[in-house]
Length: 319
Image 1 (tube, rainbow, N blue to C red):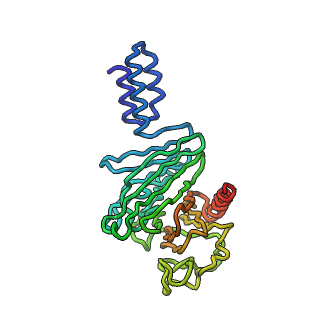
Image 2: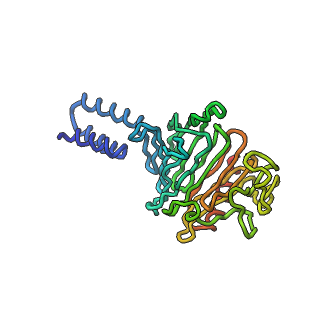
Image 3: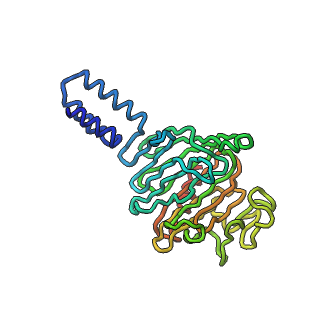
């Protein structure tokens, strides 16, 4: 097998990390036609497989079954949006969420960044690949059974940044205004046996109101929180101490390791917040172009507040 063929074989199997090596092989040859053809091949492969830069990787394409997926990666975390079956429906959501220092823990769990009535990915495109940010645009069709009532499409922009452990998400539109995280699984399968501990900015009461009770609700009887779920441990109308300069900060983590994930959500865009069995959150946003952050950490409760504040401050400074 020629050196060119070996390089192309490696490129096909290992992805764009091999491009620079392939260029070296090509330009060591005197065959101009081969050089031009191979450079064209590099360009085509770069467009369909994604693009690497020194600090990370972003890709949009299909899995082995032809379903759309998108991957964002930097030196600290790896995230993949792909396909899962939930409640008998085929849906697109985060399927891999990994802190690279702890690769054995996939924090995606059962559902992460999922949504009611939102089906499979119908579009995945790289829209930014720069020295300081990589962003994919994702679009979802509705679940077929809900298409008449919740036609969508849903869409979002997902961004990753150098040497950081968070995603910036802009929820452009929804099939149904809903976000669901049932993650942080510990290897067990029943809802009662897995999960961790919550840390919510400003929440100092002894007991958290767990699903179906509400942590916060905009008004009595609003979508997602009818009267019987208005917990005395929650906050109605005014989020009060939960409001950190216009943002909710919430996280959940495994006590034995301190590993977990959290969200920073805008106060003005939230109707209802529920806490799902010590594994995540159910959120009912309102409006379009809802910004938020999804972050990962290893330092337990302290990291929830420290990282959450940093992200909220960063968002406010950018306004």
